[in-house]
Length: 238
Image (tube, rainbow, N blue to C red; front, side, top):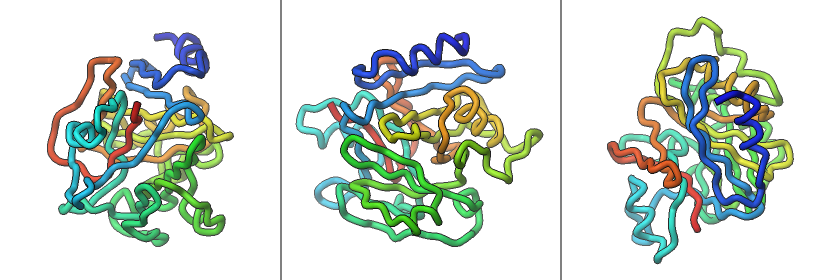
């Protein structure tokens, strides 16, 4: 798909529920799902009402009392027991505190960030900025590294980086009215993935969710990726 055509789809018809599309950029394939925060019910999911880890998209659907899940994605790194590594809030209840310090693995590759959801608005914050601002989030998940920070790529991303995986993440518009979720359909480097958010989607801030375990459900595309049990997930309920 030509870039101009994708951008037309991205900004057109803001009343559309969840707009998902397959996009090719620089020889790589990505699936994007654009959520209008003013019209859609975007939520984070981890446990059912009995406290059990949901683990997959089907189990989320089973909790929705007949509502549908047109879009879903894994949303943040987790331990072996599927508990979130960093800050996590689901429907106003905090399950894990903010982790502000550096550490091993991609999560600890600072700066990392927090995806904050409220009714009508979603924002990606760099973690230390989040701590300073202390915004209230109905739902929130911490992950890392940041992909794009105020229009700039993460400083540790190298154009010739050799680490390549299927990766997924989220970016938000400056006004917080639009959240765009992306999963690569090819193995990509951090530099390639972050550049897609910055240069193609033109989003000022974006956050990496994970790699290797990345999964997406996009019913308009007939897609619901199978796989092993997940931890935090994000989805639109209709």
